[in-house]
Length: 189
Ligand code: AMP
Image (cartoon, rainbow, N blue to C red; front, side):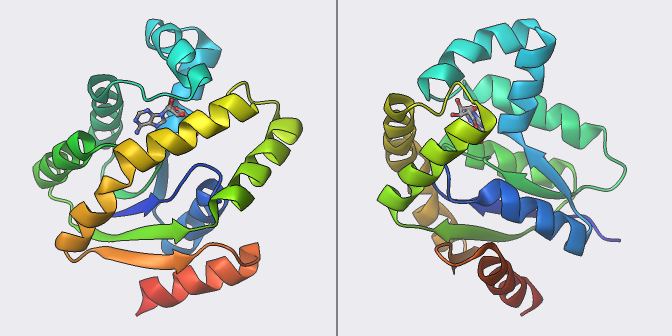
């Protein structure tokens, strides 16, 4: 199979993780979730994990340098890069660096999917997830901060990828199955 990369964007709680898992099964790509990678570091108590934990608990962004180092290491470990980035890139700096990385690994960026959701509905989803998964970054104050961080630092990527002609918008407010169908329709088109 040919190398390719997809990016999955959307505010925290939009359902990216759930849909990402499904896409990865159907299209035989590997999910790269920088949030999951960071949580793994926190669990194993690495230096990186210790540095990241306070930042994550506050709902702020871990430095581009740390994130890009993790992503580079992951890409370098793959025979064929077939990936779906979930929760990465989150800043214009990360997006620019990703372009360079993908060139280096001869991997075309096929599409950027943006899950669009109603923000208040998303906050409710996150509060629910806080109860279910007991995540320390899912209390209301952190959630509001993560929304603000998304608007300020990540939302500019929408224009960045629109200009590159790569952005596709998906209505994220349906059932899991409906959203999955919309994504399939876009990727199969
Ligand atoms: P997530 O599971 O994707 O919502 O990520 C949880 C937390 O990890 C975020 O609130 C950030 O603190 C951190 N994080 C994950 N991915 C990134 C990224 N690409 N850039 C900066 N921080 C990140």
